[in-house]
Length: 395
Ligand code: GLU
Image (cartoon, rainbow, N blue to C red; front, side, top):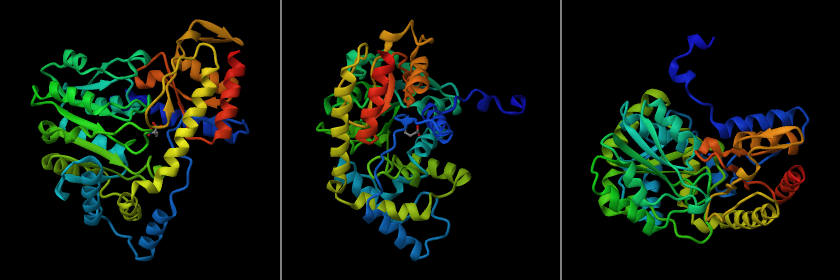
């Protein structure tokens, strides 16, 4: 039936994160004791004060279509949040609320990237960036980095990849999958390069902003000369454990916000009414209200690093944020273990699934073929058991 599908769909890779999560779920349902460390999904309950806001919205009969760009009171709360946390001044006409940050990113790329235009991605980059760019018929230009660079790309290197076709660069700090954070100085250095290219836009994906362990998060749009060309993306999924509620948003130049609203009006309409009302409670809250989750993530990070460090051939760094480790496992390439030949990170990840019953994600999906991503958004008990199993099969 493939011939009936469009080339766009036939050429579109499935999301590696979601594909692995689906596979793990399927194996689990068939009775296999899989430990899922593939998905970037907090395992906490949504805080009660957010649930209460959602329940109250239901009881107040918030049922109808929402404004395409989001409820006015939510957009106001988002403006206040941008001011409070990010030193960013947006007015409500610059805000668009969407069905998850993924939709926010897709809207922006569809709105401004023209066929043949290049979008610079700094590897490792989140799986869906490249697919979203390709759907817009843009060309992803990948700049590599590795564990020896702390998975960060220097401003001077970015300069070498800029051409007259470059339309956008996507930044993501704290980073999925590496957990690395770009410092203010590093981001300002990138800003210094981009100041010389007035036609290049920056999409700054800050969805992991609150999941960080001591470094200061800096918003790229807070660089004066870059504000007019920066689209700041955020959402409530990661910080408030609201992945399934599907609320993301942008702060952007008004003309980009308008374009995204027009697009969204033809594709999904406004985001879910109950989830928007709950989001107001979430983002108005003092961030201290979620620090218990961040503290627990940090403690799990220490645990997983300690446990993985005891395994031969696994090279690790110490991430500053998000809830992933991204070890270099290339030591195992070319080896055969228990009849399973490992030639690349996809083989390694499949090997762990089949032999250790632990789900991870191949680094190839993130532009880093020497690595795998392991999410530690899981209980300590599961982390201990998973790493014990990994150690056993690699021994
Ligand atoms: N962003 C999360 C992850 O990277 C959720 C899955 C997805 O949308 O890719 O695991």
